[in-house]
Amino acid sequence: MINSFHHYAKLLADFANQSKDGYAIFSADDILICANNAFLGTFNQTVNNMIGLNFTEIIRLAFTEKTGPKIDTDDIEQWLVLAAKERRSRDFRLFEVDLVDGRWFLFSEQLLPTGELLLQTKDITKQKILEQHLSERTRSLTNLALTDELTRIANRRSFVASVQSELSRCERSNFKVALLLLDIDYFKSVNDNHGHQAGDAVLQQVARRISSTLREYDIFGRIGGEEFGVFLAETDRTTAAEVAERLRQLIAAEPFVLSGLALPVTISIGVATGTCMSFEQLYAEADSALYKAKHAGRNQVVMAVPCFAF
Ligand SMILES: Nc1nc2c(ncn2[C@@H]2O[C@H](COP(=O)(O)OP(=O)(O)OP(=O)(O)O)[C@@H](O)[C@H]2O)c(=O)[nH]1
Image (tube, helix red, strand yellow):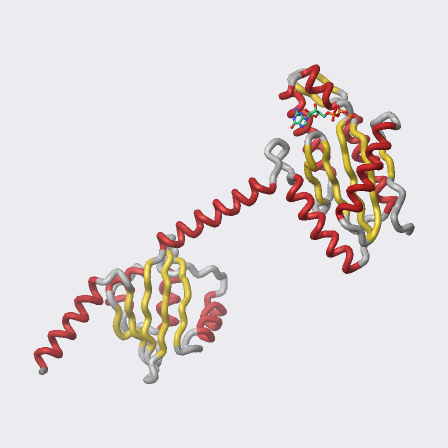
């Protein structure tokens, strides 16, 4: 009986020491009483350094030697107070820990009725790297789906979605809003006279010039072809007219330089303003104002007749 107990105890100890998962037991007064190699390895420490230390001493050692868990703090004492509140706060806790050396571990902490704390750690570095790759990929795909490839500004889909979300915010608070539709004049002749590449370059430079002058919270996008949209939240009619005129002048003021060629470019702008309007309403009004600007000779701003006077 005694022989078989020793036999199984040795088997268990051998198993623990060969396991890639870490195992450790802290006493009721939080002293590390036993741990396998894998657990000690997460702290880059040996048995002699760790066994007999309490949790606080282990963390201070890791913090001073910059090994083991990454502890992002300037105030280790404050960190320890917060950690002590969490530790032993529940019968079972599961949490992820990243190490100074870049590895990631899943820690499980189980509080025994007798007060000891059983710790198990599992290396999840590979899963974490995969997770990070996937989320970077998702972010870049989302970005691609929302960005106009040529000008790197919001594409139509993303522009409309952002405007719609701002409109619902404005609707709740009854803000005044403005939609500006900007269209490059005689753009076809740029393509016809200087080639499609020159046309592309003009589109890029127009987008860059306008982006550089807008406020961070204005929404700017390429609606299609040579047409751009600017949405201004919390903006009254007078301000919208001023912004539109400033944008018109910004484009007309200086010719665009393309491989040594100075190309004068102008834009026409239709502006719709109002409160509590749908995107479709705003767009239809701005579009019809833009049409008037084109027919009145181009290179000008036309304000749509407001739906609601203010
Ligand atoms: N280079 C280039 N051209 C484009 C792109 N998208 C649309 N176009 C061109 O833009 C031109 C638009 O021409 P029109 O709709 O006739 O308008 P316009 O010549 O600007 O004349 P107005 O708007 O009436 O002043 C067409 O020749 C399209 O081929 C693009 O991504 N790159």
